[in-house]
Amino acid sequence: MDRFIEMIEKIFDLQKGPMKFIVVVFIASLILLFVPANILETLSLAEFKNEQKKYIGLACTISALFILISIVNYVWSKINDSINDKKVKKYIIRNLERLTPHEKYVLREFYFQRKSTIQMPPLDETVVSLENKMIIYKASNSGQSTIRGLFWPYAINTIAWENLTMSKLGLSENPTQKEESDVYYERPEWTRGDLI
Image 1 (spheres, rainbow, N blue to C red):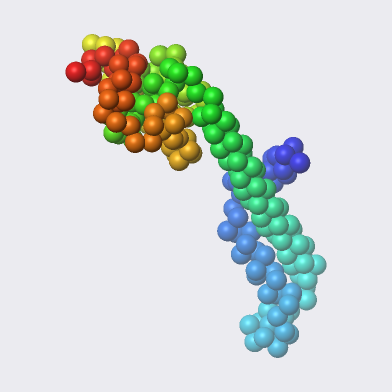
Image 2 (image 1 turned 90 degrees about the vertical axis):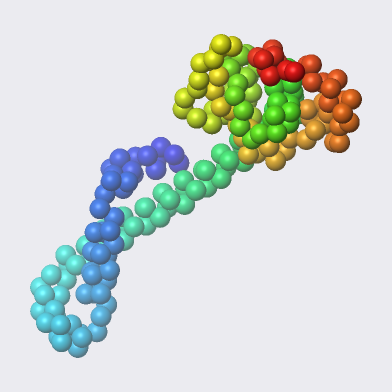
């Protein structure tokens, strides 16, 4: 079905086509075809309608087909988007269930720093793994170079954030200060400059 839609788009070039013009042609031809004769007489369009009836009907049919194809294409893309969104959500949730200890340590940084976006090294293999699993993403197109290396701002994907629990991070729901200090030194190596 995707190939069929792509073929139709290529034939009619619906995305670039003058859809407003097509809608106007459809409405105008529809009016000319179905408005009562006395109104067309008043508008001096009765003679035009009689002379050009077959072309008006053809214009109405073709423009209706363009509009119908455009609507079908729009609905189809919305259905595909919905299906893909569900697949991505399932993929992210499944990956949250399979976090490695090092991935948990990296995700804990959002908890420790109490921020929704934090600086991380883009070449760190754990950061790359979390990014590939769609759990985190680069929140900006640029990073900054520091003494400790290159760092980019990263944020947690909304789906991951909504499904991430303290237990998935290896923490209790209300960690005590002792528990926090115990796991504090499990933080990734690139945070060492932040450790006090």
